[in-house]
Image 1 (cartoon, rainbow, N blue to C red):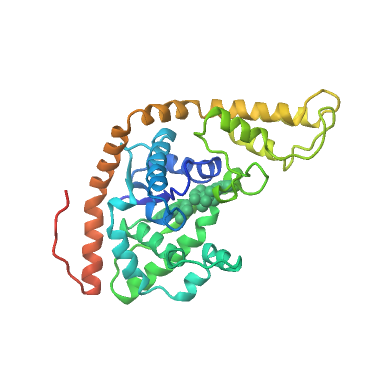
Image 2: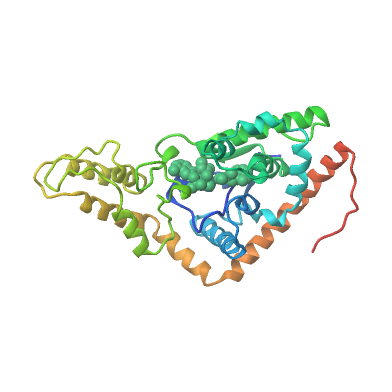
Length: 333
Ligand code: ADP
Ligand code: TRP
């Protein structure tokens, strides 16, 4: 049997941003050619922040369309929604019984919230256990995620080891697949790491108008059009590198460094905006088509749920029998 790969995104905002794409999703697309790929929408995780049914359900269909438009291919990967495999909640409980409190207390999302003086919900505290359940329920070997999710995959490794030791060898120990380099920390429009929670993100499928407004508001220093500018560590240049050719990048660098040629940050932002639209042109066209055909998206998700089901049932049979519970098999569908 080949390697099983699993990853997912939380539909806690309305669309995939450049950080999500270059930090994670682009690698998923490369990996789907190797077979065994599972990509899901982590709806239950989003409940830790989204508390409107309308917003959540629209985010979920939005992310599904984003996945498909960007190139996740239902012929190559199993694409499904977390709520179509509710057994992850059952597994999450079982795993929580072998998860030390200290392991979760060290996790950053929870720790950060508590450090800010905010009270955290149990869901946020237990978030990494549910993530472990997502990974282990398909008995995944590798988990391609961005750097900031590495800790969660390490927690999963600990939990899987603990379960295997306590009950029976059910789970492979998954490896995080972390992609380094340019895309490891995509900057947002304020120069900090791009993140939906900082409101500094550029969403790939935003309207042209909104995208342009955001690109034009990228924070720069106060060098004027005739002044030389440093392209190193410059947010516009860093984003441009992701979507432009090497020649285009070299040309922008030269223009930035030049004195008295009338090339300002506004010009550079316009070039970045044009390149973004060009780079994602096909994806944007596909996204518009999918939006016009929500039934097609629903069918793909339904098929994903159907394909992942036998794996889920096999794992849960092994888990239930390892811990000593049995359930009457009620067939779904
Ligand atoms: P956000 O920070 O916007 O909430 P998530 O935490 O949902 O994003 O991240 C989803 C995936 O995208 C993760 O694998 C994460 O590592 C990756 N990712 C998010 N933001 C960036 C970024 N700015 N640069 C690189 N990768 C990122
Ligand atoms: N926590 C991940 C994020 O915010 C989403 C996620 C949930 C996930 N379960 C997962 C990622 C399992 C990889 C594997 O991006």
